[in-house]
Structures are given as structure tokens and as C-alpha cells.
Image (cartoon, rainbow, N blue to C red; front, side, top):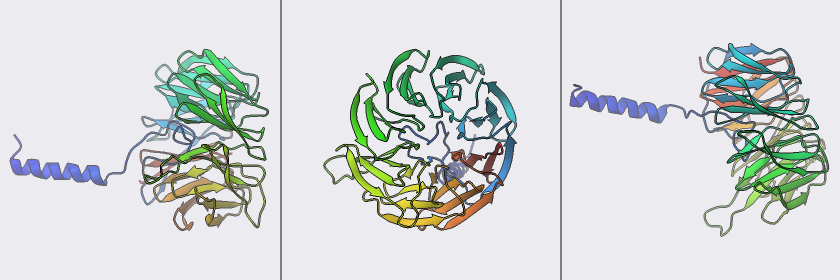
Length: 379
């Protein structure tokens, strides 16, 4: 039997451990959550070391998903890789017939992703085999998103698809006027999708009917980030979508009113925005082909700070605590302080980065165009 004094000491030690330990969380999808905000729930150590590097068979453009200390990543060699998060060693791989640019999404033990041959895959983690497949008419770069028993994704055939996630049965599809490159966001019973037809569309997930359409003025390759910016003192929720466009602008779209609330354009360098935004109630952070990372007010679009790199930014940033992480086409993996925009950490990979970071269990991951997936944490 443990003495009362010993029990008290043990209780204090365990309590302190729980309080001081970083939060742990999986990363199951491209932007971390259904609203695609690009904000991590887990934390990272202050000091980051390279823990391991895994070499895939070809370019990595997709973003990793991490569940139960296993990392899942697709590559242009047509393989989905399952990698041990602790050692960086391959556990298994699943072969498709086309390059994989779609970032995998995981829901209830099933991995969902598309390939360049237009096949949407559902792979069972427990059996490591195909659960079902669905054939579309265009390449799939969009990642999957979920509501209840439904899985949604965009396609280069111009359709937004909704399937039964358990068996792949077709439920509905919505035709747009261009490619859908980005991932559909989900808020409540609705999906919000942006595409190369220059429109933001709000669609009821239950019946596939469009309820709102907003002209963005230029086509969009990014995924929309959805944020409720309302406060407790306000009588109504202020629901907004944020995205950059090929018209060289970042937009804040009021989803209550169905109109653009504000637009931001770099006064010195007018170049497209391809990356998706990371958003909190205080900041919209987005990188552009103008070689800059921009931090804007979610309410007004007013610039808070900018950070200049030496190359384009097509990697979508991820916010982790007080830092934001992203890659550049020159191969730099960079962390900035989100308050000041000052660089606080960097790592040179030597190869262009288009993929976005993933954060889980005190580690951060990113892939490069030379086919290497890097894992950083504390040794």
C-alpha cells in the first residue's frame, strides 16, 4: 500500500506532468479540420531538430496525415506510403495507377484520396487493402472532407462529388464551370467550395443544392478557410471565408450576406495567390507568388505584417501556437512569430516545397519535390 505522503507526492507529480506536457493530437486531413483553418491543436517543442527523413519514389506534393503514430503520404510514383512516426521506416504501401497529388484524409480507420487517373480511393488501414474505389472523369487533386456518412471532394472534371463514405455509393454531384483544385470546406450542413470558375459556392450537403454563389473576380486554386469571427457581444455570428485568387488578391467573403467583405492586394507586387490561408480570430496568414507571407486582419483585411522570402510561396501555412510554418519553392522550411512576423527558425531542404506542413504528437512533417518527407521534433 502506498503511504498517504507518497500518494500526495505522486498526485502532484502526475498533475504537473499533465499540465506541463504538450497537447497531443492527430492530423487527419490537409488543413487539420473540416473548416480548413490550418491551425494545429497540438503543440511543438521550442527547439526543433531533424528526427528523420524518408525517401519516397518520386515527388511529394501532398500533405501528410498522421493517426496513431503512423504517417500517411502520397507521391507521384503512385504509392500511398505508411511510415512509422517514431523511426521514419516504411510500414507498408498501397499502389495506384496514377500519380498522387491529393492529400490523404483519414476517417474512422479509412484513408481517402484521389489520383491523377480520376480514381477516388478508400483504403482500410487495418487490412491495408482497398475498401472501395470510385471513377471520375478528371484528375483529383482535392482532398476529402466529411460530414456524417458522407465524403466530399472536388475534381478536374468540374464536379463536386458527394459519396457514401462507407461503400462509395454515389449520392450527388454538383457541376461548376471549371476545375476544382482545392478541398471543399464544411461548416454545419453546408460545404463551401472555390474553383477555377471564379465562384465561391455554398451547397447543402444533404441534397446537393446550391444556396449561395459569390463572384470572386478571378479563378481560385486554393481551398477556402472558414471562420466564425463573431464575439460574445455581437448579436449575430459573422461567418467568413478567406482565400487568395489568381487575380492577385486575398478576399474575405461574408457568408451571411453573400458578398465580398474586403479585398487585399500587395501594393508593390501584384502576383497570384495559390496557397490556402491559415486563419484565427486575430489573423489571416497567407503566402503568395510575390515571395511574401502576409498577415491580415480577418475583419478588415488590413495588413498586420509581411515577411519577404527569396522565392515563391505555394505551400499553405500552418499555425502552431505562436508560430506559423511554411515551405518555399527554394526549399526553405520556415517558422515565423505570428505576432511580429520575425523569422524564428528555418531549415534548408535543398528542394522545392509545394506541400503543406502537418503537425501531430509534438512533431511537424513536410514533403519536398525531391521525394523526401522530413520529420522535426525534439531529440
